[in-house]
Length: 196
Image (cartoon, rainbow, N blue to C red; front, side):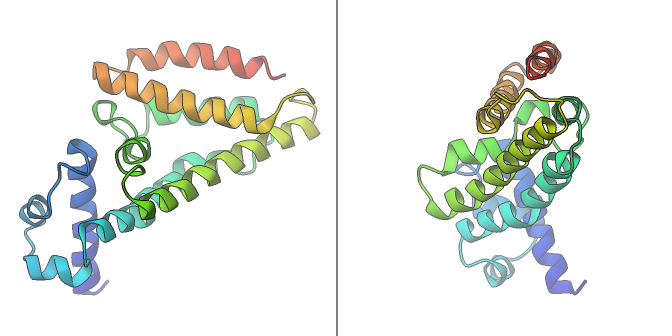
């Protein structure tokens, strides 16, 4: 990796850490520069604006994480009830990238930035839509194999799973404690079993 590419990646990683812990709007370019210890010139060499950097964080940091932890575990699901449960359980209790006290970075940025910035809306929408489609595909596969009832609507299930995940993440963030995750997962398992 070239020095310039390494500097760019350092800026993105450090900026993400700040934004995840403090929020996008309260993180300034000066905060990012101080944390990364790059010059202002180096920052502006890589990003014309803070928002350009923010979209790059979505595309280059959050998107790969979403692919690895949200999409790939259920992409070729043959048993969606178990696979959906295992994915959400991992995300809530084990994933080292996601911290209880800061919530879900995609959910945070969606709430904070989509009313104000169309580029964020588009980039975040693509991530969320991809996750939704994969859940719907899992339901369809489960119906074909006889593991999910034929009357189950895949889109409804996808919205329910996604909104439940984001909602419980917010409770965990509010309490700075993952005990609510355990209670949620118990009920989530009941919900998934009702799809059989």
